[in-house]
Every structure is written in structure tokens, then in C-alpha cells.
Image (cartoon, rainbow, N blue to C red; front, side, top):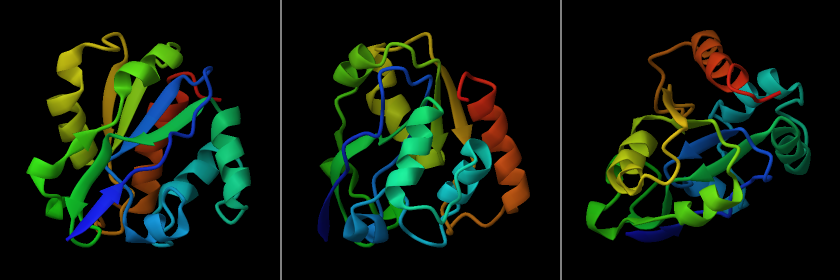
Length: 170
């Protein structure tokens, strides 16, 4: 069993869209970068939305999110999990990130997108009852994880583009 901690958010106070994952996988933890697993399609999707190549440096990709008014974070601050799979998270070990502080500092968020079902479920269970940012629209997106191969890339991209671009991201 591994004790896993998430990263600080990638965000600016002007962010309009918040994309939430569950918690970083092993490749991301090792690289200390969001979505570092090369099979994960997150950065390929963001490249299509922001216009900055998925092969650009991590710093350039992060800058493209900020310039596009997109914030990135995880629902969970920490948990115990063997391996990288969300299904392996020990439910009793879950600690949620400080969304009260985040929403106070990011009041212009209009939509909260979940990268997969686990992020959405944990947010609804732990954060939504606090009614911290009740006016934001919640959107579950198809997971960019390589473990979710049921939907072709072009279909995932279309859903992601609609959710992110139609809600104030540039």
C-alpha cells in the first residue's frame, strides 16, 4: 500500500473552468507532473483546445492552461492506494483537498469538469454537500486514462471541447 498525495492546483484567479481528477497516478507522482503517463490522452486533448502541442515542455503546457482560463486540480488531497487505479483507493483513507479556500480564491469558476467517474463521485460525496460553489455547472467527462478505452479519442475530444470551450475557456 502506498500513501499518495496530490499536487498543488494549476490555477489563476481568472480561471473559468476547473478540471478535476481524482489523485495522481504513479507516473505523475514520479515525474511530479499532472497526467505524466504517456498513454493518458489529457495533454493531447488540451493541445487541441489550447493550441499548444502535447509535446511542448510541461511548463509550456501549464502556461497554455492558465492562458486559456483553465484550472487543474484533484479532488483528493491524499489517500492510500496500491498502484495507480482509482478502484484501488482505500475509501477510509480519503482526505479531500481544501475547496473552501480554492473557491474563495477562484470565484470566477463557472464550470467544474470531472476527468472520469471517480473524481465526480468523490466531489459529490465530500465537497458538493458543503455548497461552496453552488452556481458552477458540474460536468462529468470521459476519462482520459488509458484504462478507459471504450470511447475513441475523437469522440472524447468532442465532448471535452464542448465542456471546456463552451464555458468561458479561451
